[in-house]
Image 1 (cartoon, rainbow, N blue to C red):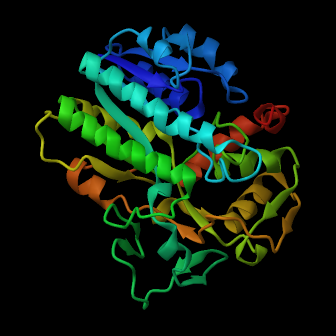
Image 2 (tube, one colour):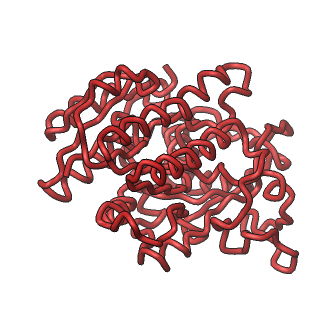
Length: 356
């Protein structure tokens, strides 16, 4: 089977490529990357040594995609993943849309030409912020938890946010580009008869992830503690009680293989949450305690500042993935943190590399 992975030299793309190559010799992996992400170039040579064929190109450019060979499946792992992208005064809103939406359209045109299957790695940030931001929470063991006796919005429970919850704006510009990409992908697949799967992922984390907050809070926090870089608790009183779940990309492989083999005319839901869930979630405060046990003290400043699109508790409920696919995460959050910390201890200045 031939697979094209976009953003192949990013953390998720490179991790999936290595996992596929290690899992079976029957996978021929191609990848494209524009190497705009700081540090991404260091993943190129190790992938080449595994036999991965890498194209230096930009998926925002239709001509760069035209040069790619035909494959059986495309996994879209390329995106600007920051919820603050385009609104932080440092980045371009137009560039965000081009990265996350126009690039997807180019890939869908490629799939149309080659009748290739398409997997979009989407995000928990497609879900509407309005009711998530006003969810009643209480602090338990230095982490926010939903108040159990409240009237929950449809699609939300103490187990997390389900696929049935609203994707109505506001979801952030980033979230909107992903929602739009989801809709276009499903329409292209139905219209031009190629398989499409949308996997809405929780926060990705693991060894080798870049130490930048936009790449994932777990790796950023661990590398910052390891290098004694100052950190801040932002929003919600500056206590660090906000919670996110955690998923290692390797846990996607069994699900992707099932999706690859599913008949085109299946009645299975095309959109699914894929996450670590409540059992693999932590608050920033709890993450700091874990890091302090591992690396010793590091300063974390409490601030009163607020940011747009912040949510006190964002955990995806992946129950549907278990019901439909028999899938559930196998790599627990402690394994993810331990492997990330082990990697961090071998690096000299990973945060600086990631911030170039």
